[in-house]
Length: 198
Image 1 (cartoon, helix red, strand yellow):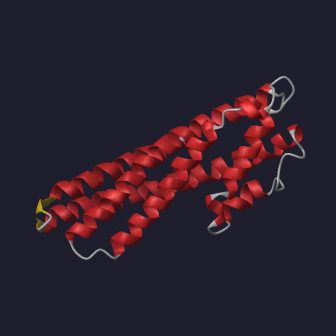
Image 2 (cartoon, helix red, strand yellow; image 1 turned 180 degrees about the vertical axis):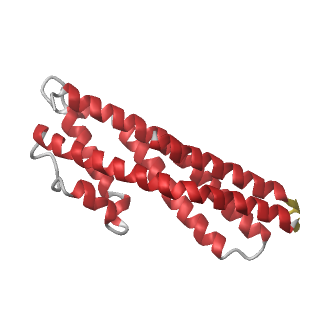
Image 3 (tube, helix red, strand yellow; image 1 turned 120 degrees about the horizontal axis):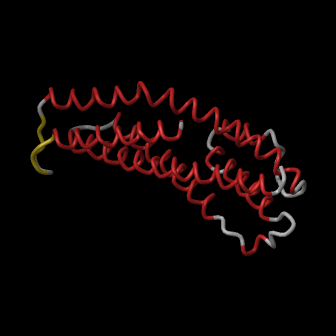
Protein backbone atom coordinates (compact mmCIF):
# COMPACT_ATOMS: atom_id res chain seq x y z
CA UNK A 1 0.00 0.00 0.00
CA UNK A 2 2.84 2.40 0.83
CA UNK A 3 4.52 1.58 -2.49
CA UNK A 4 1.28 2.62 -4.20
CA UNK A 5 1.29 5.92 -2.28
CA UNK A 6 4.89 6.62 -3.32
CA UNK A 7 4.11 5.73 -6.95
CA UNK A 8 1.04 8.00 -6.87
CA UNK A 9 3.21 10.90 -5.65
CA UNK A 10 5.66 10.19 -8.46
CA UNK A 11 2.87 10.24 -11.03
CA UNK A 12 1.63 13.54 -9.64
CA UNK A 13 5.18 14.91 -9.91
CA UNK A 14 5.24 13.84 -13.58
CA UNK A 15 1.97 15.73 -14.05
CA UNK A 16 3.50 18.80 -12.38
CA UNK A 17 6.43 18.50 -14.78
CA UNK A 18 4.08 18.51 -17.76
CA UNK A 19 2.36 21.59 -16.34
CA UNK A 20 5.74 23.30 -16.14
CA UNK A 21 6.51 22.40 -19.75
CA UNK A 22 3.11 23.63 -20.94
CA UNK A 23 3.59 26.95 -19.16
CA UNK A 24 6.69 27.71 -21.27
CA UNK A 25 6.14 28.94 -24.82
CA UNK A 26 8.35 29.68 -27.78
CA UNK A 27 11.22 27.74 -29.29
CA UNK A 28 14.80 27.09 -28.22
CA UNK A 29 15.86 30.50 -29.49
CA UNK A 30 13.35 32.45 -27.41
CA UNK A 31 11.44 30.97 -24.50
CA UNK A 32 9.02 32.83 -22.31
CA UNK A 33 6.48 32.01 -19.61
CA UNK A 34 3.92 33.83 -17.54
CA UNK A 35 5.06 34.11 -13.95
CA UNK A 36 1.68 33.07 -12.52
CA UNK A 37 1.71 29.86 -14.61
CA UNK A 38 5.23 28.96 -13.45
CA UNK A 39 4.21 29.72 -9.86
CA UNK A 40 1.17 27.46 -10.25
CA UNK A 41 3.31 24.60 -11.57
CA UNK A 42 5.83 25.16 -8.77
CA UNK A 43 2.99 25.01 -6.23
CA UNK A 44 2.12 21.54 -7.58
CA UNK A 45 5.69 20.38 -6.91
CA UNK A 46 5.51 21.76 -3.37
CA UNK A 47 2.18 20.00 -2.80
CA UNK A 48 3.66 16.70 -3.95
CA UNK A 49 6.68 17.17 -1.66
CA UNK A 50 4.36 17.52 1.35
CA UNK A 51 2.99 14.02 0.79
CA UNK A 52 6.00 12.37 -0.85
CA UNK A 53 8.47 12.68 2.03
CA UNK A 54 6.23 11.06 4.71
CA UNK A 55 5.10 8.32 2.30
CA UNK A 56 8.68 7.59 1.29
CA UNK A 57 9.96 7.50 4.89
CA UNK A 58 7.19 5.13 6.00
CA UNK A 59 7.73 2.92 2.94
CA UNK A 60 11.51 2.88 3.46
CA UNK A 61 11.17 1.94 7.16
CA UNK A 62 8.80 -0.91 6.35
CA UNK A 63 10.89 -2.13 3.40
CA UNK A 64 14.20 -2.10 5.31
CA UNK A 65 12.55 -3.97 8.20
CA UNK A 66 11.27 -6.60 5.75
CA UNK A 67 14.67 -6.72 3.99
CA UNK A 68 16.45 -7.44 7.29
CA UNK A 69 13.94 -10.15 8.26
CA UNK A 70 14.37 -11.82 4.85
CA UNK A 71 18.16 -11.68 5.16
CA UNK A 72 18.11 -13.33 8.59
CA UNK A 73 15.81 -16.08 7.33
CA UNK A 74 17.85 -16.61 4.15
CA UNK A 75 20.96 -17.05 6.28
CA UNK A 76 19.49 -20.32 7.55
CA UNK A 77 19.21 -21.62 3.97
CA UNK A 78 22.77 -20.77 2.96
CA UNK A 79 24.94 -19.89 5.98
CA UNK A 80 28.03 -19.59 3.75
CA UNK A 81 26.24 -17.80 0.94
CA UNK A 82 26.59 -14.26 2.28
CA UNK A 83 29.57 -11.93 2.18
CA UNK A 84 28.22 -9.77 5.05
CA UNK A 85 26.35 -10.35 8.29
CA UNK A 86 22.59 -9.91 8.65
CA UNK A 87 23.02 -6.46 10.24
CA UNK A 88 24.22 -5.14 6.89
CA UNK A 89 20.70 -5.63 5.52
CA UNK A 90 19.93 -2.47 7.52
CA UNK A 91 23.33 -0.77 7.66
CA UNK A 92 24.02 -0.97 3.92
CA UNK A 93 21.24 1.51 3.22
CA UNK A 94 22.98 4.18 5.30
CA UNK A 95 26.54 3.99 3.94
CA UNK A 96 27.15 7.01 1.70
CA UNK A 97 27.70 6.12 -1.97
CA UNK A 98 27.99 2.39 -1.15
CA UNK A 99 24.22 2.26 -0.66
CA UNK A 100 24.03 2.30 -4.46
CA UNK A 101 25.27 -1.30 -4.66
CA UNK A 102 25.56 -2.93 -1.20
CA UNK A 103 21.82 -3.62 -0.72
CA UNK A 104 21.70 -4.99 -4.28
CA UNK A 105 24.48 -7.49 -3.48
CA UNK A 106 22.59 -8.59 -0.35
CA UNK A 107 19.38 -8.98 -2.37
CA UNK A 108 21.18 -11.11 -4.97
CA UNK A 109 22.64 -13.30 -2.22
CA UNK A 110 19.20 -13.73 -0.60
CA UNK A 111 17.67 -14.63 -3.96
CA UNK A 112 20.45 -17.15 -4.67
CA UNK A 113 20.07 -18.69 -1.20
CA UNK A 114 16.36 -19.29 -1.80
CA UNK A 115 17.04 -20.80 -5.23
CA UNK A 116 19.68 -23.19 -3.85
CA UNK A 117 17.39 -24.93 -1.41
CA UNK A 118 17.01 -28.69 -1.88
CA UNK A 119 14.83 -29.60 -4.82
CA UNK A 120 15.30 -26.28 -6.62
CA UNK A 121 18.42 -27.16 -8.59
CA UNK A 122 21.53 -25.10 -9.18
CA UNK A 123 21.55 -21.33 -9.41
CA UNK A 124 23.23 -21.46 -12.82
CA UNK A 125 19.79 -21.66 -14.40
CA UNK A 126 18.35 -19.14 -11.96
CA UNK A 127 16.56 -16.07 -13.23
CA UNK A 128 17.60 -12.92 -11.41
CA UNK A 129 15.60 -10.46 -13.49
CA UNK A 130 13.22 -9.44 -10.65
CA UNK A 131 16.19 -8.34 -8.52
CA UNK A 132 17.91 -6.63 -11.44
CA UNK A 133 14.76 -4.83 -12.59
CA UNK A 134 13.98 -3.56 -9.11
CA UNK A 135 17.49 -2.37 -8.37
CA UNK A 136 18.19 -0.95 -11.83
CA UNK A 137 15.05 1.18 -11.83
CA UNK A 138 15.47 2.20 -8.18
CA UNK A 139 19.13 3.23 -8.49
CA UNK A 140 18.53 4.86 -11.88
CA UNK A 141 15.65 6.87 -10.45
CA UNK A 142 17.73 8.05 -7.48
CA UNK A 143 20.59 9.18 -9.68
CA UNK A 144 18.35 10.94 -12.22
CA UNK A 145 16.39 12.76 -9.56
CA UNK A 146 19.54 13.79 -7.71
CA UNK A 147 21.06 15.13 -10.91
CA UNK A 148 17.79 16.86 -11.81
CA UNK A 149 17.72 18.69 -8.45
CA UNK A 150 21.40 19.64 -8.79
CA UNK A 151 20.83 20.92 -12.35
CA UNK A 152 17.63 22.77 -11.39
CA UNK A 153 19.37 24.77 -8.64
CA UNK A 154 22.01 25.90 -11.12
CA UNK A 155 19.65 26.52 -14.05
CA UNK A 156 20.30 29.80 -15.79
CA UNK A 157 17.20 30.48 -17.83
CA UNK A 158 14.05 28.64 -18.89
CA UNK A 159 15.78 26.18 -21.25
CA UNK A 160 18.05 24.80 -18.50
CA UNK A 161 15.17 24.75 -16.03
CA UNK A 162 13.06 22.71 -18.49
CA UNK A 163 15.96 20.28 -19.02
CA UNK A 164 16.14 19.74 -15.24
CA UNK A 165 12.37 19.27 -15.03
CA UNK A 166 12.50 16.71 -17.85
CA UNK A 167 15.23 14.74 -16.07
CA UNK A 168 13.13 14.82 -12.90
CA UNK A 169 10.09 13.57 -14.81
CA UNK A 170 12.08 10.64 -16.22
CA UNK A 171 13.36 9.88 -12.72
CA UNK A 172 9.84 10.02 -11.30
CA UNK A 173 8.48 7.76 -14.05
CA UNK A 174 11.34 5.33 -13.45
CA UNK A 175 10.50 5.33 -9.74
CA UNK A 176 6.93 4.27 -10.56
CA UNK A 177 8.41 1.24 -12.36
CA UNK A 178 10.75 0.70 -9.40
CA UNK A 179 7.79 0.67 -6.99
CA UNK A 180 6.04 -2.00 -9.06
CA UNK A 181 9.27 -4.00 -9.38
CA UNK A 182 9.88 -3.71 -5.62
CA UNK A 183 6.40 -5.05 -4.92
CA UNK A 184 7.02 -8.00 -7.24
CA UNK A 185 10.44 -8.64 -5.67
CA UNK A 186 8.92 -8.59 -2.17
CA UNK A 187 6.15 -11.04 -3.10
CA UNK A 188 8.46 -13.42 -4.97
CA UNK A 189 11.19 -13.53 -2.32
CA UNK A 190 8.66 -13.93 0.50
CA UNK A 191 6.96 -16.80 -1.34
CA UNK A 192 10.30 -18.47 -2.02
CA UNK A 193 11.15 -18.35 1.67
CA UNK A 194 7.72 -19.62 2.70
CA UNK A 195 8.09 -22.50 0.21
CA UNK A 196 11.46 -23.26 1.83
CA UNK A 197 9.71 -23.61 5.20
CA UNK A 198 11.05 -20.40 6.74
